Image 1 (tube, one colour):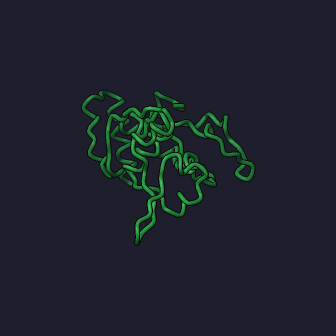
Image 2 (tube, rainbow, N blue to C red):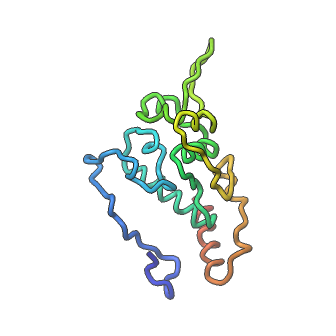
Image 3 (cartoon, rainbow, N blue to C red):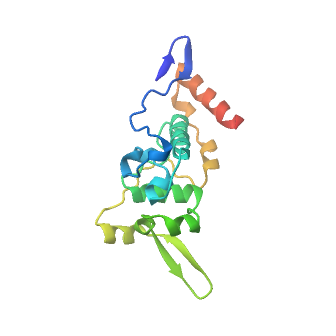
Length: 173
């Protein structure tokens, strides 16, 4: 929520704590976080902590910067596929213990190496009957690629200055 759009147009306040819970009493469910902002820990069925909130905050910040969700998948498979393309596969130790890892990844073993790979679109569809659909406006191979998106051209007035302020704050970190 914008605190004071006229006098403080860049100050926001978090107002929705509807899914808030004590960290020691959390229950893993798919609707713990909205899909576009869902952390890999939730998608893969891993233990989690308050760090998932930082993931969501990063996704929201990226959306404000880009004007479009960073990971707009309609399916959890799409979410983890987009995340993996941008940030690499989750670590092997995480995939080994994720209760839902095999929904999205399969283990491959050859003579010298054992590891995980993301299931192909075709493999996922054959197993689930759900067809993946590309929903991204921007396709990134690295989060660094987001810095090269020029969405300022479509902005005017206070929207332009809000975008510039977000850019400055992101680059400061």
